[in-house]
Image 1 (spheres, rainbow, N blue to C red):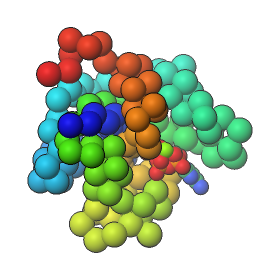
Image 2 (cartoon, protein in one colour):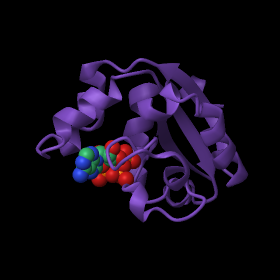
Image 3 (tube, rainbow, N blue to C red):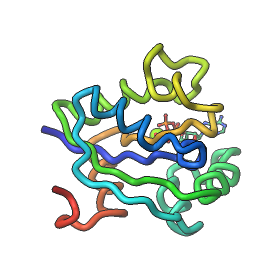
Length: 137
Ligand code: ATP
Ligand code: MG
């Protein structure tokens, strides 16, 4: 089993969609092995999306991520990282497949409801940014 890091983003928490997103996650066979609702600080959001620091949308992305609480999660499953990317759908909801979280719920390419790690090394780093080992069960 492989673990991945997930965020239910502010556009989704603001519309009370935490449970709806979790239902899609669980139906897809992924297990929520850690979860908490937090208000991200600007420093946390800038560190988390640091790889995008030079992109034109960075400021907007950080402002969005701190605009309301988020739910951070660790998901576990067979091929968990790739599986969750599938379940999320394409970054731009206009390109997302039917039944994916972003097709169902995302508002735009920026406000796209969920994050999921893109590789084993980033999953490890992202999980460690928000969870202690004993919080993951
Ligand atoms: P995430 O990393 O959040 O799981 P992703 O891996 O599908 O999403 P990335 O290319 O890593 O997509 O972009 C990170 C986030 O930056 C996107 O989820 C989105 O919120 C925001 N973003 C990406 N491209 C744009 C854009 N063109 N305009 C505005 N925001 C964008
Ligand atoms: Mg990404």
